Every structure is written in C-alpha cells, then in structure tokens.
Length: 156
Image (cartoon, rainbow, N blue to C red):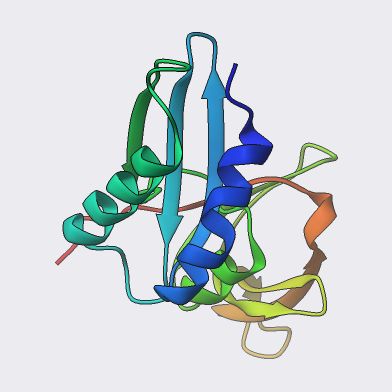
C-alpha cells in the first residue's frame, strides 16, 4: 500500500517550489489518495491538475494501482495548520475547544502557537443601564482547539 509519508515526501519540495503548502494527504484502503493543497491566495484548478500530474509521475501504477484526488481544502474543512489561521484572519470562525466549549469569533491571527480571536458580548452599562456590545480579545493555544471552521455567510 502507498503510504501517506511517501506522498508527503514526494510533495514537500515540489509544493514549496510552486508557492503551495500541503494541508493534508490521506491514503485510504485501496490506495485512494486525497491531497489537499493551498496557498495564501487560494489554489487554482490548473495548480491542482499540475500537482496531480506531478504526483502521478512519481507513483507507478504498474507496481500499485491508485486513485488520486488533488484539491483545495475548501471552506467546509477544518483549519489545521498555522498558515491556514493566518490566511483566514479577519473571518468569523467556529471553534470547538478540547474541553467542549464552543466559541464563534472573529479570527485575528496566530502568534507563537496561540490563535487570537475577538469575541463580542452584550453588557449592561452600569451608569446608563443601556445594553452595549463589548469586544474582547482572547488567545487560545492551538493544541487546545479540537476543531476550527470558517463560518460561511451569504449575507449581502
């Protein structure tokens, strides 16, 4: 069976040369290979095709048959790498922490392994007794995040 490690090894230098990064490579039973690539500006179809052809040339179908899919991770996939958090700065994300706490917040960025987010809370002004929205900046250690996904909004 083709290994995930071999796929990662084949792609490491090639993706860097193309200005891309590997988000995830998965090899399922039957050598069904799925590769997710990205860059800071988004990945084009031509880049996916080019990487797919490169990888097909590295693998030998006469030795082991395989099925290969190369694509961008898309907005529905969880953010995993620090560069993905950096790329999506300014967007609203849903975070589920390892302790089960869920947060919806604006992603500010990542620094030294900490995800920086801005949350909003409705508070009552002690003087005027009017409600107002306050923003709070939080830092969450990346290894305390079970999953983080970009919130897809269709508002205009």
